[in-house]
Length: 178
Image 1 (tube, rainbow, N blue to C red):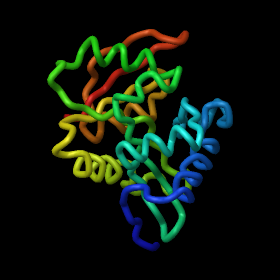
Image 2: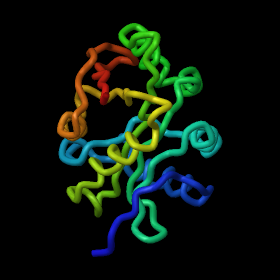
Image 3: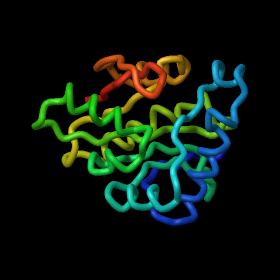
Image 4: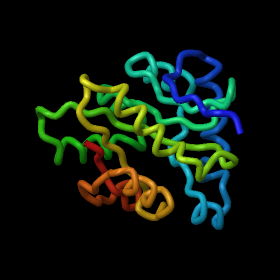
């Protein structure tokens, strides 16, 4: 097995590979059994918004040679009103995070099915944490409360629950990694 490289996203090709991986794992494209076993992603980004987010704070990617096999999207808080499904998350963050705290929102994380259970999830977060300091001192995100596979993975790398809230007809866990 070749070593996986962890780095920041630097090209349009990498952004497109992120979108391709996102669509393969989107909740609309994953069957019920797989959702339970493997998890899923909820948000679909456009190349334009993904690129703008990357310009503000480059995304973290895992690569097997030139193939993007995993990603953790960095979402600067200034994008809080740009993706409809994420607006409630930013309202909830504002209600629990101290005004002085500088945070980056993790806009989504996903690992290609063939590369799971190899420590890539943990390494993406380690890379993200190192990459965002000293500008940001924490990473905040939300997870669909029914996505138990993903929640277990987040808690395993050190995320802690801030709160559970209801929005868009479902329950969400707002979580933080300091």
